[in-house]
Length: 178
Image (cartoon, rainbow, N blue to C red):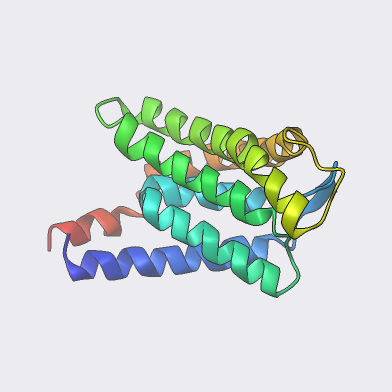
């Protein structure tokens, strides 16, 4: 991959990070978690178009900025990062030889599983030790994270399908051939 492709991916990741940060203004509290469906939409877009590592970096940066601005909680880190990374892995690595529909389904399931189950369980020590929430339980964040992720994933399914048809991010693939 050449430097032009890396710059384009980094720029796209920065724009997606800004979108996730701004989108956190549209969040809702649900069973102790602050649900931000736009983050999950962005995670899937980054996972599909940029790959797992850029998606992970974008999710980390968005979580960090949201926490600095007071728009998120420390629980944003494990949830969004696990979902973004697994979405990218499912799309790019595990389902590499499958059709486009199967790969997208893998990305959606990766975000759902990564954020709700893995991120929800990883949030337990964060809630217990960082946020000093003694009432936290190992599976306590799984369902609230699932609700937030489901809203973002359904939105992503609609938007990513339209983006694929409109070839919105084709410039990232074109940069590989320069």
